Every structure is written in structure tokens, then in C-alpha cells.
Amino acid sequence: MLIWIWLGSWQRQIAEQELRAQQQLQVYRATLVSEIARFENIPRALQSHPVLTRVLSRPDDADVIIRANRLLEQLAADTGVETLYLMNARGTVLAASNWRQPHSFIGQNYGFRPYFHDALRGSFGEFYGVGATTRIPGYFFGLQLNHEESDRGVLAAKITLLELEKSWQPTRDLVMVVDPDQVVALASRTELKFKTLTPLSPEARQRLDRTRQYAPMPLAALAVDNRNGHPTWQDKRYRVSQLDLPRRQWRLQLWWPSRPLMVNATLVTAVAGFSIIAMTLLLLYWRQRRRYIQVQLKAKNELEYKVMERTSALAISNRQLERQVEERFQAEARLRSMQHELIHINRLAALGQMAASVAHEVNQPLTALKNQSANTLILAQRSMYPQVEESLNTMVRLVDRIARLTSQLKLFAATRRKTSGLCRLDEALDNVLSWLAPRLDEQQIRLVRTPAAELMLPMELHALEQVLANLIGNSLDALNGREEASITLEAGDDFLCLWDNGPGIAPPLLDKVTEPFFSTKEAGQGLGLGLAIVRDLVEASDGRLDIADSPSGGARFTLNWSQDE
Image 1 (spheres, rainbow, N blue to C red):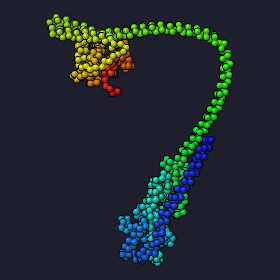
Image 2: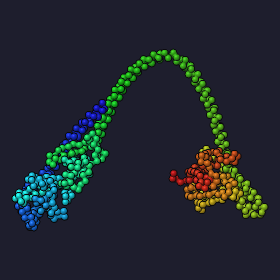
Image 3: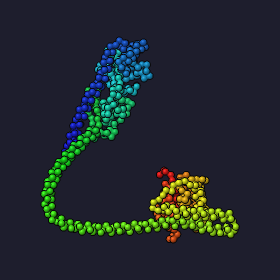
Image 4: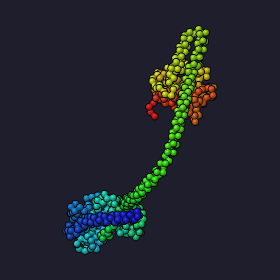
């Protein structure tokens, strides 16, 4: 059915378009015929003009030639003819309306033109071709002047049809005039003009060369693919409507695209198909609805019967339900007991993690305090009391740090507090290096500091100290026993970067090293909380921690507080 609808719509649109095309062709033909007829009587009106006939009898008289030139120039300007010119019996132009122009016809010989020979034989000569002098195509009229046999001549007129062709250009269809040799003489598209619909035969090309009708045009065949009698040009399929022009045996053709009609036929078919599907679905819905109502009525009767049957079973079901409710109460009691036990276990686990975190953080200042105590004893034995005083002050700061760690256990609890603030990097770094200086000297590790003086970072002082202590401590552990070891620190207004030239971190472990209790060290050498604490402190200050491989071969830690992602 859909195929039948598509074919019917297609054929109907083809018929309608063909009718419209024929109507358009009638208009184009009337316009073309009237344009040519408007000028064909001009040679007849001048056939017996004394000035022109006098030129034929006195071709060497310059005054007569000038008068004839001026007459033809005035007549051409008044009538709109492109050129009026007078030729002798041999085809040489004696007088012309364009005698003042660079491409004047005077002295040119057009005896090879068919309209010249037709006029000499006494008939009205007509011809269309490219001008031999101006290279401008035009329509030519020729008529023999009434004079003695010895002074015969031909008066010719040339008109252009360029304005007519321009009036065809706005249409999307292709309008063209085809001559008997399949040459496109007039066209609405310039790329079609003077092309051939089929390749020229040798006889036709020889005849056209002899009359120089379209010279110097190459008359190449148009790149048209004819499928089923319908041409395809520039990837568009066309259908051709044609109307004969008895004059010059021309054919007026109108090429109109067939794809829009195919699209319209497809749309009509699609609409019809959707309509058929919609009607079919409505019919199926009605039938299904009717069957549903019947099934509902039947089910209602069966339900009433089943209610009567199951009423007797309700008592048994109620007793079973009571037992199930009692069992449910007992299960809920056991569940609440297990929940209390689970909460207690979670509290113990959280307490253990917090204790491990604090123990890990307190361990570093305690180690530094131990080193400072030993240094103080040595300095006291050497009576270096200013250094003793400075060492004691360092010990006081370490004790204060231990006090801050124990008083701010909430940094390692499940709920973090904000650590954002503002502190000087050099102050925090100096404090940390005062604790770790013995290890740096012992391992002969070079520390490279590149940050500017008095650089401020958006983090609290004690939090930044913890971060630096953990990162530098991890680097010291990684560089243990390595020759020419170095730690490099670089910082800016919103970032802090630290890297070493140690063994680095294996790529599969980069995402795991910040997890609590995960450590790459040997058993007993660490709790695996250092990087987890660093990550929590950095994130609590609205920053982020990035871990990657360093170009020098070690690990690279970047603290970034920039808002750009």
C-alpha cells in the first residue's frame, strides 16, 4: 500500500510539474520570439533608403560613406540594435553604425556567414552565432537592398539576447535554447552556454567551423550522465520539458530537479504510513480494551468465588502471622544488640587510628628533642652558653609543638577542621630543619631552597610544619645510603613543590600511598600515616596534593592552592 501511495504521489507531482514547466516554456518562448520580432523589420524599413543605395553605387565616395555611417549610427541608437552595417556583393562591410568604435565592422568581410548568402538569394537571412569581430554572441538579420544587379548589397542588423538570458538566471531551473546540432546557444547558466548535449559529429563540426558560428568556443560536450533518459548534472538529477521553436529549428528546454518531488512523495508516503499505523494501533487498542473489560468482568466473578474460599483460610493465616510477628520482634532485638556492638568496635578502631596518628606526629619532635638534649649537654660541657641558650629555646619550641599536637587531636579525627590561614614559609621551614638538621648532616643530603624570602602560604603554621616534616622525613628515608642525594624545594604564592632524586614511587602505588596505614617501607619502620596526614592537612586548607615521578628520578610532591583546575 505504501509503495502504491508513493508511486501515485510521484506520478501526480511529475504531471503537475510538467504542466507548470510547459506553461513556463510558453512564457519563455513568447518572450524570445517577441524580442527577435521587435528588430526583424528594421532591415525591411531601410531596404530602399537612398543614402544606403548610393553607397553601393559609389563605394569610393568618402562623403557618401560618412553620411551612411552617421545614418546607421543614429538608427542603431534610436532602435536599440547593437549594430547596423551594409555589405557589398562580396561580403565586405562598406558602412556600419560602430564606425567610431575600436572594433568597427568597416572593412571586415562576412561573406562566409549563412545570412549573407540567404539575403543575396533574395530571402530574409537569419543567423545566430558569436561575432567574428567582437566575440559577442548575437542574432543576425540580413536583407538584400533593392538596387541594380551590378550594385547588389546586403543590409544586416545584429541584436544581443544577453538581457533576455539574464532574466532567466533567478530561476532555480535550467533554461536553455538548443540548436539542431545539440549546441546550447542560450542558457540561464553561463557554464552551460556553448556546450553540447552530445559530442559533435565530424560533419557538424566541419560545418560549424566553415560558418564560424561559434568560433572560437571549443564546443565541449557537457558532463551529463543520462540515466533512464533523465540527465544528471553536477550531482543533481533533472527532468527535461521541451518546446519547439520553428524559427532556426531551435528547441527551448527547461531542466527542473526531480529530487524535491521525490522528497515530497516520500513525505506524503511517510504521513500516510504514520496515519495507517496510528489507525491500526487505535483499532488494536480498542480490541485490547474490549478484551480487557471482558477479562476484568470474568476476574471479578472469580474473585468473589475465591474470597469465599479463602475466608476459611484467614484464621490459619492470622495465626501464622502472629508467630511471624513474634519472630520479627526477636530478630529486631538481636539486630539492635549487634548494632551496639558494631558501634563499639568502630569507636575502638577510630580511637586506635587517632592514637597512631598522634604517636606518629609526636615521634618527630621527640626525636628532635632527644638530639637537642644531647647537643645541649655537649655545649654545656664546652661552656658554650649562648649556644646552650639557643638549644634550650629550640627545645621549648619542640615542647610547644608537642603540646599543640596533643591539644589538637581533632586534626586526626574523622571530622577535620579547617587549617587554612597565612604563614611564612621560611619560618616553618627553619623550625622543621632545626629538628631534622642532624639527619641531613648525618646522611650528607643537600637541601636546595629556591622560594623567595618572606613568602606567605595559605596554611596555618603548625599545619605547614607537619606537612614539611612528613615530606622531608619521607625523602630522608628514601635517600638513606644514596650518594649525591639532594632534596629540592620550590614555592610560589599558591604552590609548594618538593622532590628528591631517590628511587621514587612505583606507578601502580601512586594512588595508594595516601591511604592510612599503607607504607612502602619495611615492617616496623613506619605506620603509613605520613602522607595520609599531609593529604588531610592540605585539603583542610582548600588545597590539593599531587604526587608524580620527578624528572631527576625520585618522587615529586606538589601542594597547590590555585583555584584553576
